[in-house]
Structures are given as structure tokens and as C-alpha cells.
Image (cartoon, rainbow, N blue to C red; front, top):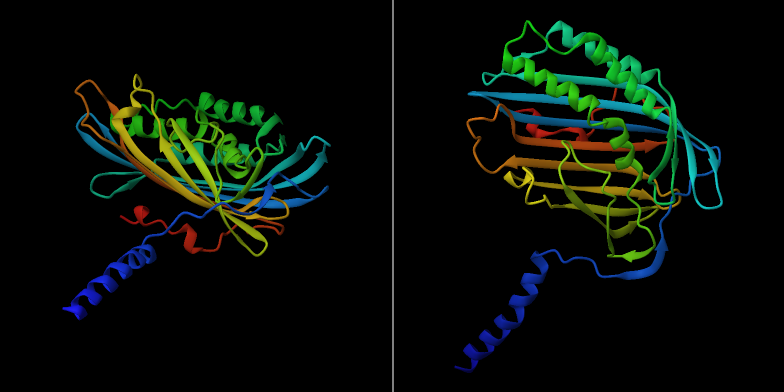
Length: 332
């Protein structure tokens, strides 16, 4: 009997320890207070490689459609000025911009007609030929830009000149390709990428374990009402490790409550410059209820992932294959 009581007591003491070892615990607020702000060296020069991959599943009347997209944007930025208040002016020179969009039928046939191919090539050329400048605030938020609006207007002019009516196509394909080009233009992907690459630093002192809210300008693809929080969780050598999580907060009167989704990622922050030298993020949104009879081209589900790398050296036109770039949802 005494042995049995001892066994029960030992088991009661060990069970909580076992539970703690299997369930990750959030980091506590530890270490000195840190002021994380953009601190780029004067006359510094860096290369940025941003890759975005996504799959959108749509319904058009009674037909299912799948849009696959991969874009790669490589640009160089040069520090051309800094102010005492912490503002940093960057001159940005696009180097490579490639887009690889496909329409996939329910049977797995991949389609991209010649007129779409021409539009994509023209769009890539316009972006490569439009350098611009931006001014960053201390937290990496974009305070001002010169030439970026002109670039966006030039992209809109491409579609205006070629017209995206796509008359020879069947209605489902026509609507799908319209959606593709509106994503590249109306949703201002370059401006949004710049927000994602730079505008995530906290507006004050933080310690390991602290969490702060991201600027509302940085939204996932496609635009949905979210609030993203960022947490500083560790320091590894010359880098800080940050994690990101999204809270989906749609207004009740909008159409977004018909969707559910998630967005999460990580940022490796250079401790000296406060650049996010390695970022990755994944998103998944899904419609919760069935389409109504009067709806036409409807987003049913989207999966996507982005990666951003910032280096001091040139980036090759032909990218290497990194594990971070392998996305299973594109292989289905």
C-alpha cells in the first residue's frame, strides 16, 4: 500500500513536467530594452530578391478554375541620404522582374495564350526601366516616394493600350485573366512589397518576448482586413528572430466574414542595420459558405507564400533553388 501511494505521488509530480516539455511556451520578457530602428550606413548598397508564389481557386458560374502565379522581383537600393530625425532616402533600381502566371483547368491543363504572354513581357520591361526613390521613417514605413506612382501609371497604361477584353476567349478564361492583370496593377504589388520588406519595426523600446502591431498598409494577397502582430523572440549571433501572426478582423457589414484564413511567418533581422535580411511568410484563405446563384467570378480559396532576401552582393538572373522556395501547393 505504501509503495502504491509513493508511485501515485511520483506520477502526479512528473505529469506536469512532461506536459511542459511537449508544449512550447511563449518567451518571457527578458534582456535589456532595445530600440530597433533603421540604421543603414551612409552610401550603403544592397540587393533585394523577393519571390511570391500563390494558387487561387475560383468558381465561375458552374466551372472551377485555378490560377497559379509566381513572380520574382530583384532590385538594388542605394542609401542617398539620412536625416537627424532618422529618415533614410533610398534610390531603387529594378534589375529583374519576372512573372509566370498560368490558368489551370480542372483536368490539369495549363493555359496561357500569346496575347497574355505579350502583356506579361511588356509589364516586366516597364518595371525594369523605371527607377524610383523612397524615404523610410525610423520604423521602415514609407514616408515619401518619387517615381513610384509614375511606374504604377505606366503599368496601368499597358493594359489600357492593349485592352484586356480578350474577346476570343471563353467567358471563364476571360474573367480569370482579367483577375490576373488586376492583381498586378490595381493591388499595387510593388508598393505592397516595399511595405513588407521594410515597414515592420516597433515604434519604441522592446525586449525579448515583446509583441507589437504591424502597420495596416501591409496586407496579404489578396487584400483582406487583417491585423498582424510581430514578436521578438530570440537573438542568434548577429541577428534577431521575429515571428508574425495575423488576426482576421473583417467588419461585420462587409463580405469578408464569409472567409476564414491565416497568415504567419518569420523575419531574420540584422542586428546592426535592422534590415529583414531573410523573411518568409505563408497565407491561406478559404470561403466558408457556398456561392449564391447571382455570384459570378468568386474566390473560393487561396494559398500563397513569399520570401525576401537582402544581401550586399549582386543577385543572379537565374535563381538558385532554395528550400524556402519549395511550396507543395504548387505541385498538386
